[in-house]
Image 1: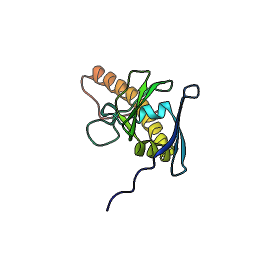
Image 2 (image 1 turned 90 degrees about the vertical axis):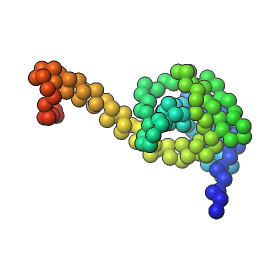
Image 3 (image 1 turned 180 degrees about the vertical axis):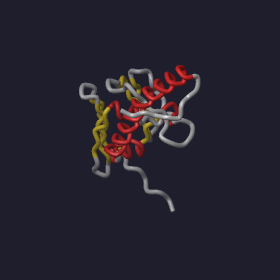
Length: 143
């Protein structure tokens, strides 16, 4: 059985001042997608990675801008970000999914960011212990 067709956009507006891509779909849904959100959830291999899992965590994209939007056939957009990222095609289905799942996606992203912020300190602490004692100790101390 064929999958139902993805909702099609009826209106797309790039809001550079508010850093939002506004998308209206023919199913009546409407999403305001922040540039940062679109950048960190880019469908590119650079972000998605080449295997399973969450992909490569994108940090420091709070102020990213979009300098251009290019249509790709009748099925997608290529977003040109001001940090030089311009790979990955945002299909109509993906844009709809990103809008529909925005709250859950963003919560998952913030959790990953918080976890990543703990890791560098952990690694620095482990290197200090290793250098000080000649071998890595199997103990951890949490404050």
